[in-house]
Image 1 (cartoon, helix red, strand yellow):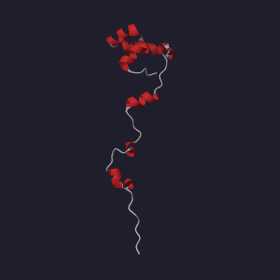
Image 2: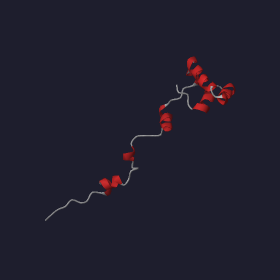
Image 3: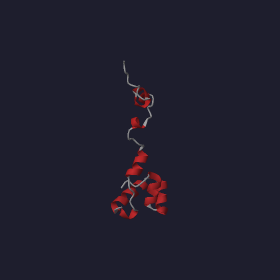
Image 4: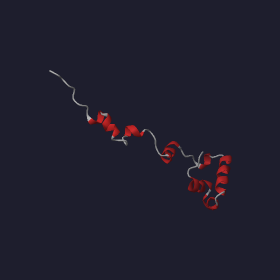
Length: 89
């Protein structure tokens, strides 16, 4: 009597993984840059920025006329965030 093993389930065969390139096992741990920075970056309160850091933000914002106008009315943190995204430090 010849015994044969039962066939492997489809999810364990190479054909199943080759036909599903979008399976979670093949995607890896990559995320979009914007999502990663939102998770990794912890925002600080404006009071924690040093005078040198505020001056650096001001210099960047002064290069854009609209940002400079907003800086005069809403403050440097609000203007920088609106035009350039989260404060980098």
